[in-house]
Image (cartoon, rainbow, N blue to C red):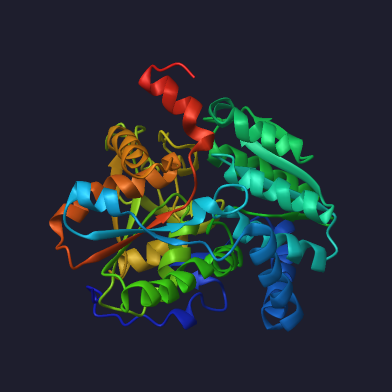
Length: 407
């Protein structure tokens, strides 16, 4: 697909020196954090050029996290739907159960490099919190994870997993008691303890250098996919699909293919109960340009700039803003965005369990819901690759409740 604006993508130029992707991104934080972000940016740029750091990162990704992950032909699902051949990039098979471990390892190594002994993180579905708690246990770092009270209730298993790894999980009782509020509390902590604390932000969000840094730690997803597709099919896919909350797994899959103009890319947001105010988390369906938690991007907000209520069956997508790099590529026409409602997500979740014996995360099931409608529109010669960003063990109790089943 060529960009609708005629803009040719040069991904190497993004972000610019001030952390902007076009008009999006930047640094919008309290003055207390500016120096910390500048120091982090310098340390990260040095680490990128340091062969020892890169070798250490690669070693942990292989031996601790379990990379490379497989590229799996979902043969029975493809037959069930008809049309395109469907492949899954199996990030669900990583240690801790999701792609989040890629970034957590990278940032924990940065924290060590900077001499920081304490780490904080936010989490929604709990997968980033579990990944952060896990790497902190591995590297001997003190760990505090902020999590909305609502999310703690629907993700009890992940709360327990974090505590098993020695993390302190702090319940956030403000606002909607979900992901946005957890980020607020984590940022307050960082402002207070910036000298000895590193904030492992979990998605491609926030102030520069986080969107760039998180993207870079996840771009291995797409790099592996390219090599694996050539090995399996002798060509690249026709379409890439991933769910999008902040957008870390999506940009991780998409990034290596951005300059391949014939490959269509689709990010799938949370349609919740439907596109009505306060009942979804699809930022491109009624969102406005604004600033939230350090970055300029599309945000679900009212005309007065107040953040709207959001909803998604998946805690990891229940967030009012989208990563600035996604906002840029959407505006220039390189990445398309769709949404899936809770009902569609539940049907896709059940379908994958039944056809492939794979229990997907509710987040990943948004991408699957899109594919169940898209694949039948395509020919059998075409190929879709879906980012299966996480496994659904954490969601089984919640799904059982929604289906009225006993566990």
